[in-house]
Length: 142
Image (cartoon, rainbow, N blue to C red; front, side, top):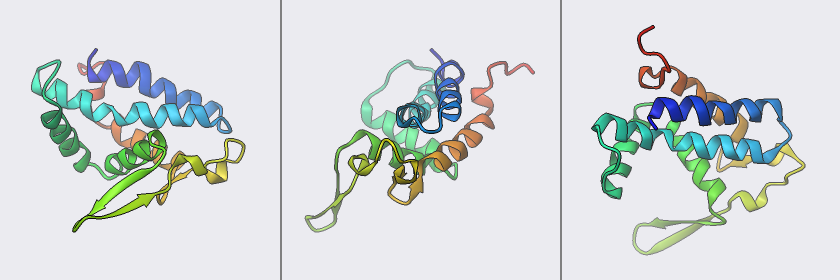
């Protein structure tokens, strides 16, 4: 599956479902977590390979994220959603534990934040950026 196929068939569909069901946490979760992997798909497509060592893939994907305004923020949000607690190493052996999605109330969308990001807003902002990438166009001949 190419990055464009994944984006069109999985990510955009997850976002459409999340928009249609704004009070369903799981749809927002699915949209953000699936959208976060688009950078890895793009990294693989750009290399012409279907697999590569994990560190190389992470480096290439993060380079793609760094070229946009919201994809790095989206990555933080996806990690927030996937992990019960995130432990950040703060130089010198000091660690900080960042609260995660365990604080989200499934019935209350006002609690659907990750770090400093409103999850619905980050989904929309990142989707808008991805839709502008020519690599994700389903028909690049147009």
